[in-house]
Image (cartoon, rainbow, N blue to C red):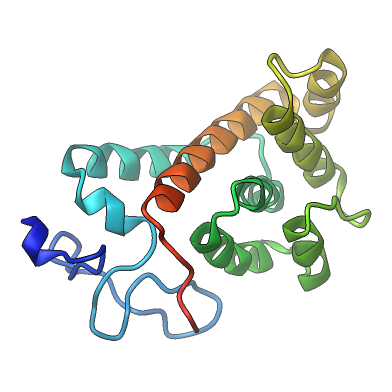
Length: 183
């Protein structure tokens, strides 16, 4: 695919012909009505050597154990808020609702506030995500131990992988100016 075939990151789904628009609000939008991609797929098309490895990484992350779905979405929303990444916030708002976060909890996370009503796993997930982004490493021993208590060692490591992956995606999408779709 040449650059002239994809102007300003509005590419047609030649690489992913099976893609379709969501038929309901429980899914997020990744195609425009003209079948042009929006979101994370756009810059990846311009770096095809990374397309399959990034897709595989996303699939492998979903297989990690120990991090409940609601906690995972808490980490992703928190990371995308810290990076001010509009497309990731848009897409994962839908997924966070599907995972069980309330509109009020999502709104607070997007404001940079930990909701008091989060379950234990999501609460510690929020705290670890904030600390990882706001301090030098390593994660404090106190927070590491709280994380292991709430999520197990594998859960904390899964969380760190999610934080890293969505930090990377946020940086790439922000660098390319990828916005949320106007719905």
